[in-house]
Each structure stands twice: as C-alpha cells, then as structure tokens.
Image (cartoon, rainbow, N blue to C red):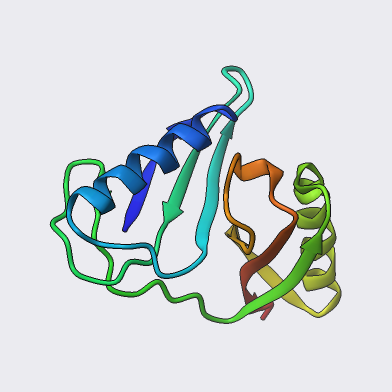
Length: 138
C-alpha cells in the first residue's frame, strides 16, 4: 500500500498508524519493511511531501489516501546501509550524492529509505538501507 501526502516530523507516526489500521481493517497484514521517500521539503512550514510504502499479503481496495501497488521497483540504484542515529540520514544523503557524482552518475530524486527495525517513531530506527536511482552522465 502507498500513501503520499504532506507531513511534518510528528506526522510520520500518525500516517503509519492510520495506514496500518486501514490494512488491518481489510484483513491484510504487513509482510516486510516500511519504505519511505521524501520528495519536497517546505522549509517555511517545516513540512515535506512524502511517500510511505507498506508491503502487504493480499490485494485490498484503494482509497483516496491509500493506493494499492502490487510491486515497488527501484532500478539503477546505488545504496548504503546506515546503522545508528537516524537523525543523521540527511548527512548520508549528501555522502551518497557525492559518491554517485564521483562515479560519473547523475542522481535522480528522491532517496528511498528501507527501515529495517520495527517502526515506533520512524526517525528512531537504528538500521536503514538508503537507495537512490541514478543514470550515467552523458
């Protein structure tokens, strides 16, 4: 299931809670790690446009807020694993961006985060795999 909307830092937990409630109300279960992507930062309002992806075990109806997606595919990515304080993830984005440039690759936004720990508050996770799509600079 996919959710895309405008969130604040404190809105992550609520969005995940509402999405999980909908999944359970439809008789489905989460089957893997939550994936997130941040598309746009709104510094003036301290909000951002984000996506949450939750893999589930069956097809359920889409709603206005939640869209069923059978598969999430990321292609032509470079990745890294972050272990530790997830508040440092923006620094990891910068490092991954510079690594891609040094390899002659152009970074395609957004960065995708796979949270390997159970999510209590999404920014409290200890282990995160970070992916970003790239293409060769011509």
